[in-house]
Amino acid sequence: MATRKALTDRELDRVIEMAWEDRTPFEAILFQFRLSEKDVIKTMRNELKESSFKRWRKRVNSGLSQKHLKKRNSAISRFKCSRQRVISNNKISKR
Image 1 (cartoon, rainbow, N blue to C red):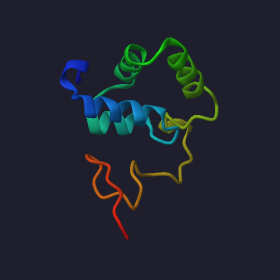
Image 2 (image 1 turned 180 degrees about the horizontal axis):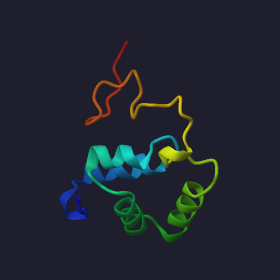
Image 3 (image 1 turned 30 degrees about the horizontal axis):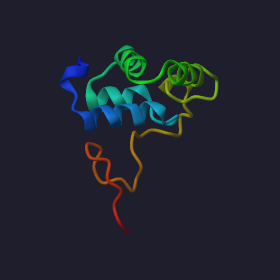
């Protein structure tokens, strides 16, 4: 597993952004950054203000969150947008 020290500031920002996104599952973060759900939670706890972390955890654990693949609609089968060029840089392609 990757640790905080192994992540660049840019990667850390992207992990936090992906964690905040409701439709990005923990498995996508694991695939891209090799951070387990437990590691993402630790990272969020360390990097966010306490109130922000509590709000994030409440949302992730709510019935509305799709952070866990088990809770997702089975029709959603990919980690990235069809208009997204590469998952590593997350650049939106121009049409």
